[in-house]
Length: 572
Image 1 (cartoon, rainbow, N blue to C red):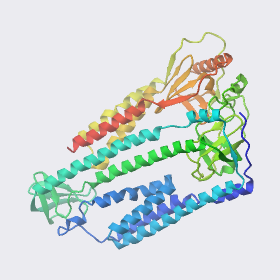
Image 2 (image 1 turned 90 degrees about the horizontal axis):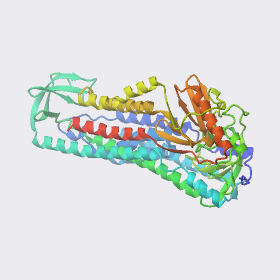
Image 3 (image 1 turned 45 degrees about the vertical axis):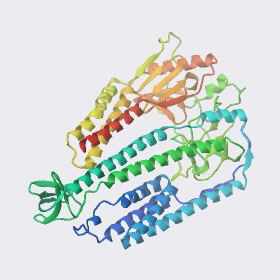
Image 4 (image 1 turned 30 degrees about the vertical axis):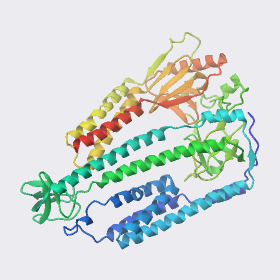
């Protein structure tokens, strides 16, 4: 494949392009710090207190529960997606000005909203400025039709973000349903309750609870300040007791459900943007310039002097891949041998590659990187790094050569991780039952301890499943690596090489994609290299590396259902 020619982006324009960007610390540190300052100012300037004459002051507030979603999301989005974080900050500022009657909060969040709006305008303007600098020299290129069709097949599709979004949607629906259930329970209690005076026998400010005698002591969660011996009006319906000044508030479940749904929508929008970017990049002529690039330690393409990084779908930098070559172009044994030469220890240090960068070259844009032998596909938009990325270092351990000529083992063969890891995995997998059991036994004291117990159980269950099922299957056509969350099918021709160190064997089949398995003898690495060598000698063109979700995703999904059912059963 011949790399399409394009004008080079010279040094002065690279410097202008790099300078035309909002400093990374402005949204991530300055705006986040301003958010904290606004929150503290609003809390300090709120003189209201809970009172029985106006229970709505400390009662449930559906509007605030909804507004809490952009409020809490703002600092996280400012770090993750600054433009979206600015939007969340502006949204909450508007809601606060409309619905909040605390002047200090209006002023604090109003100022923060204006700062977010200014930074958002700055971000958009600088991205347009970057695009204009590239447009000064960029030229159009056209991709071959056959190549475009192959790239369309290889472009990233729905993946982990979609699975996470599905889980969040289920959690969000569960949160909203639970809110409706609990709100109906509270309404039934309030309609059946009688008003009485209760004596506070004890106060626990650490836990935010009081013990009210009506006439038996009942522990009640509160947000206001009380003293032992104080007499307060309460509503009583059997074992259900609430201070009149503090109606029971279950709108936290409403906010949590809406937050989960909003996060799911954000993940799906980003996934759809990736698909839309793929259609744009492969759908017609592209504006392009010539630059140099290297891969960093995370498999990202680093543009000159660290000006930007492009998270790419792992693909070889110096090899012709059947996914990106012309229909009539075949891979030769020499080209395949060069594939992963450095990983096998018989190559030289990699040097920057000259590539054609085609697409929207700006912060947040989507681009293709085209060399003489490969096309690097983006799996995320171009980003400006906070610091210069480290280029790819030497592979781990020492390379293993192919085994000497002799009888190969009967295939297929399954290579498991060391027994110790599998035993630990089986024990960790018990967290699937222990987490919900601890909650049902009533051990957690409060909602945050319940969340912590369920999260710990799920974490151990996930880690246990991964440890228990980590393995490599050797077949006649290739290897199947069962890793954390994903299963990779790798034809022998696509195997870079196998290396070993004190941790075990290291396998690589794509830049930035390595697989480590402990407790496997070195001779099995030599067997893999021998099978690769035989496959290359036979001239088998092989196929492409494929990957799919593994059983760990099902474990997470089932555990999420179990956790939701556990909370429902405990509070039914």
